Length: 231
Image (cartoon, rainbow, N blue to C red; front, top):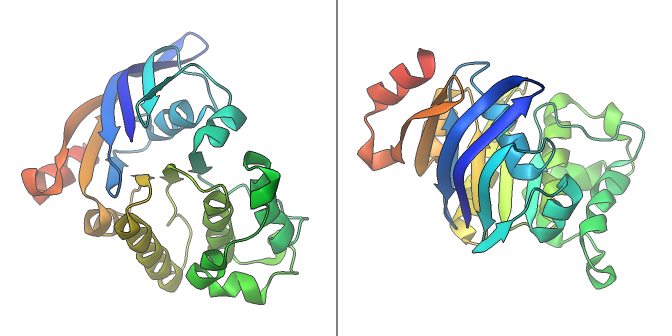
């Protein structure tokens, strides 16, 4: 579904990503791991168009994508749940979800029942402002908003950050269900190792903007992964 080849990215004169290549397959979770500051979020921004890559190629479902802005990539099927959630605090839960309609034709401007099946709390709070929700509820809203766009690729940047344990469990169950449905590829950035290890089918470990370890879970020793993300 997703194929990155030799991706580079700069902030001004500083090079952050140094030739990253990776793939994410349909019906799988690909987990990108590494210490703080190694380029994980920058890689997600390059994939989703929230910061333009400097070089390399991105293919989605066999189509080579140019250096496109985020809204154009969203229309092509890339949904992004950024670190920090970025919900609209003054809009209601319903209005937050409806912002996802901007990627869709008018005939698809409805909230699928599946959204409330995955996140029942959102149905109960449909008229509440986003800013009145707890951090865990906001994270569920951010994921639900991404699903509204019917993505081919779902990109999640540290969805467990600052979230209470019971919500972490629920989010893990949702990610597992979405993977098993086989309708999208999922790229997950995660610092919580046990959460990531339980979900991931493939791992990509970054260090200083480069891939230092990559492979399927069955091909990589748990200790090697732990060492790779702690150096």
